[in-house]
Image 1: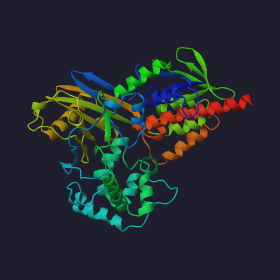
Image 2: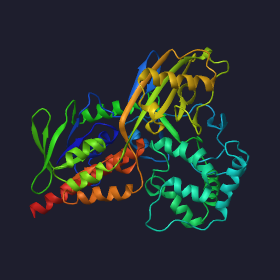
Image 3: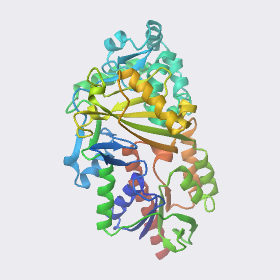
Image 4: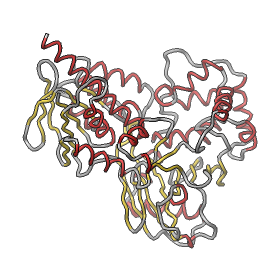
Length: 472
């Protein structure tokens, strides 16, 4: 069978990898993968310049979602996986000061009580209000989605939302928690309320369970020695060696359904080919455009997924620019600022910078307003002034790299799962066509890997079943 994969980011490459392995009883497929850009990898891009390893997109993944680690092992890269360096020290800038995150603090709730009670991040009133959660009845109704912000405010108060949930969850998803769907982003909170009634009780119970089973590194974050770009390089190399036809600078202009399933693809170079199955891993806008003619309902649902803009600034300072050594792994912002947070890559990961250099990644999501759209010089000035001021830098950075990602991050806003269901329903008559990756089912690297592989399997399984029916 022939599979077309549209999009050469991590999702599309993972889909191609799954297809050539012939798993789940399917024979290896013949795969053609096209990427409109000049390089593979999408938002996963690593650059080495002047002995600095710079990540322009994601710099790590979480180990508790195993899809990325599984793929890395299959590629023979397991010995290149590294965890964070030293002791994980992360701060929240709250009420004008950098304050350490309480030990055992999750993205929203504490898993240990005493560090939460004594933290300076929350005011005494905020802590008291959060404690009311222990007494409140259940609030969620079955089948009714709500925003994360509205739910947490009702149960825990505004302090938790402003000081923890919005910086942490909003930082990951590029949107305010007052936009984000509870059921699409944190469905565990619904399950926790149903089981325990109190979210605090649920989180403390989860913390006790996790500590009793703790093994190995305490941080869930992992990356590769050579950066996440080495995962892309390994995939491209091994897919090429396996006979996959990989193309950059080539796009699909039109997809037309074929009788009995599959698609005819017309490419931007004027050529056409027939395929038994298609995986669309070209993001919201790219996939929507290719579905308009053949599956307008699916395209319309996909078009309703809003997109966020994000910018990453990589700042390199000489270590001597700081009066005190920069040992923190970074901080998140709960106060107004031109950034949502920073990661000190040189402290967090081995081999990111020479010992006499401090390498920092600063994040400017679109939700911060005008600063995110500012001209580059203005953006750099605002970010370096803020970061340098907080860290006490006595001179400006010696190197700055700016990576803008306009309208690249899907936002899982209220009703997202309904949009996912509408896309699936709109493709019901085209079972060999699948939409994969961050537009629908998760924005992290492991999520994209898992969904790329799953959608390739579903598309090829549907094509195989269709072929059997035709032969019968």
